[in-house]
Amino acid sequence: MSKRVAVVLAGCGVFDGSEIHEASAVLVHLSRGAATVKIFAPDVEQMHVMDHMQGIQTDEKRNVLVESARLARGNIQKLSQLNVHDFDAVIFPGGFGVAKNLCTWAVESKDCSVNSEVKATLQAFHSQSKPIGLCCISPVLAAKVFPGCEVTVGIEKDKKYPNTTDTAEAIAQLGCKHVSKSVGESHVDVKNKLVTTCAFMCDAPLHDIFDGIGTMVQNVLKLA
Image (cartoon, rainbow, N blue to C red; front, side, top):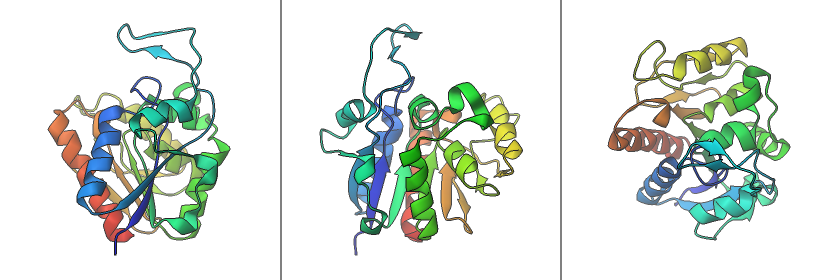
């Protein structure tokens, strides 16, 4: 039977929303796994809007749900409408929008707050023992919500993973275990049914990131 998977987005664009290549990779691998997918995003204002060409903040205001609809080809629902009983698993692609719009990790690190709907979604799947997939920076959501869990955001103290060490240290300070994994791998926390992979936390070719996300999706579907 086809697995039913919810995908939660954080906007559109690496610097202020969901990382587009990661979101696309998740959807491609779910399609390859014959999963039935529905896409959700919180109906909230973005923390800010970035000019992706110049890498600077603008004065624009944008809505996370409306921007996420670009990636969903318009077929999207408010996160508040997600019912855990309708799905076998949930996946969160990465991108700075996760650390800005789904939580405040970008400015507060381990002391961040998590959007109430995002937190409720994570807790609902966890309480039902349904798998949760997270890539790139999104594993910090699990670290914040589930003390003692195991996640990966790459390999610590490796130049190919420039953002991993500081993030891993913050994850450890939350009482969680960081497990070093290469870009082509994912880590499965069997107890908590969390599957994580580092994606663009690694400075790697796009096809390697795509393949690593594939291992995460495959493991999520196996656990579902």
